[in-house]
Length: 200
Image (tube, rainbow, N blue to C red):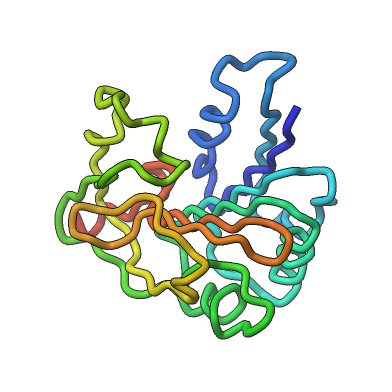
């Protein structure tokens, strides 16, 4: 099995991700997904995992950034979902362009947008991440409402690629090969428990 570690910044924030990775709940899944709290990030031996999902992690220090750097440098896949606990300055400083040669994300985070309801825009379904949705318009991609996301600025537009947009034109998914691995930034939350409904 492919081994994935889902790190929850808030209880329940990675539940849907883990379910999507192993929807049949098989004893011998194609993807084995484990769910741990954010505090376990520096305690786990990430060498045991092929892919790491961070869901609504609040902030990062040098220890967490160092663990993630080693993981990507060993060829792992990093997927980052945002949420209401996210502190953009911390992301940009420890994982973004301010980290210099130790940058781990394909884009820096800007302001949160939460003034109305938004929808995904796949354009021509060109990117491999969303290509399976082409011809499957009833799958839910086009009917999933988004209440909040973060605006971003690609750090290296020549290397990073936008896989999915919002109907407003901002990126929803950005990916980039970094070090020996691949980093994917999803600019919205993976679960409704990661949304701040106070501004809705």
